[in-house]
Image (cartoon, rainbow, N blue to C red; front, side):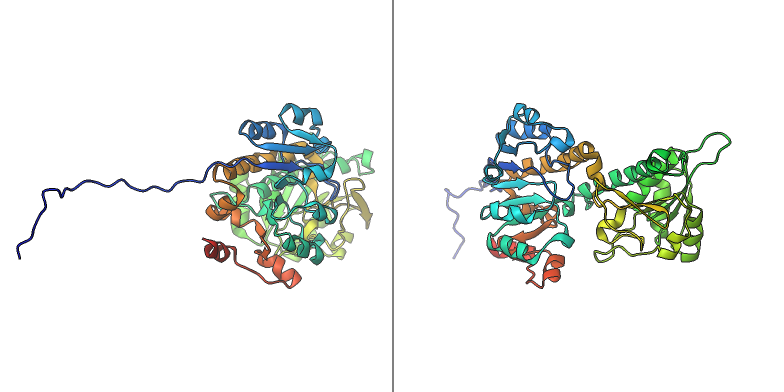
Amino acid sequence: MKPFVSPSFSYVPLEETLEILPKKKKLFIGIPKESSFDENRVALTPQAVALLVNNGHDIVVESNAGEGAFYFDTDYSEAGARIAYDKSEVYKATTIIKSAPIAEDEIALLQDNHVVLSPIHLPFLKEQMIDQLIKKKIIAIAFESIQDDAGSYPIVRSMSEIAGSSAILTAAQYLGNQHQGKGILLGGISGVPSARVVIIGSGVVGEFAARAALGLGASVTIFDNSIYRMMRLQNNIGRRCSTSVLDPVTLGEELAMADIAVGALKPINGITPMVVSEEMVASMKAGSVIIDVSIDRGGCFETSRPTSHHKPIFRHHDVIHYCVPNIASGVSRTASRAISNVLMPLVNQSSDFGGMETLIELKSGIRNGVYLYKGCVTKASVAKRFGLKYTDLDLLLATQR
């Protein structure tokens, strides 16, 4: 048979079916006052709250939540937030944003299916706390594990920059007589040599500690096991400085002459390698200062033990030890702005995508921070620590599509 072409047949282009984004969702956000972990920071500044309120979100802030960073209730109320004088009122919000890890007494206040954005501190996390969070099907996101589009950790980097700069400024204070130090000016003056600084670790903390020390005129020596990281540090700071691999003999010799030693090594499998023995510390000059930035993961120095902002130092072998785990909280206003600069666009973006659950599904960087998702442990390190079942979040989300 010959082919038959109907006169009604025509080649008409069809419209392309595009993806329809979810409807923008109004969020109910709660910001509680932190009462643990020596925490003075606040997760969202009044400026960030004002922007979120103007975008239609409802925000409740516990009274005095920002007091440690010198943000007051009037600042938040003028930004459009509601001030709550009862903590339970804050936890009626569906999204909780905290600057400190979830405390044990706060878990009872959390509602089922809450979204919680906060840091996670494994050494203080208890199995019963995880069990309660699992039962409540909480979506818990560790904001220090959130990655940006370039694959870096913006909050960790900001806090590391603060810790590195603060370490040198703090050490400079404790070298002075007002803190029973040796009475040494860090940078020296004409005719008087500057202080000698040893920095162990050439990551972001080490880089910004080196920047601050060199900027004040100190003599700096940096130790690390990565030649690449030391090369990158020198390129970033734009000048040559003394560097060495972590050889115990060379490290011991430098520490014996140092006025300041900064521990800034990165943890390996969650624990910082201890590279400075008690014998090395005992050989240091009397009145010298140790700033162990890595103390929250064990510390680089054998003689280190955690201290607090209220009692920040102790002396051992006549060497001043400063081992505060949360150094960034000592400059809480700067730290709060740094955290808020990351979290505010994230919260706004989650609203545009229809909620945090959709954003988690679409953004791999956000998924990297999720350690609990609706009753499942989705972070291998958390599951391993408590002997719980680990569920891959990517697979879990794939089964829900």
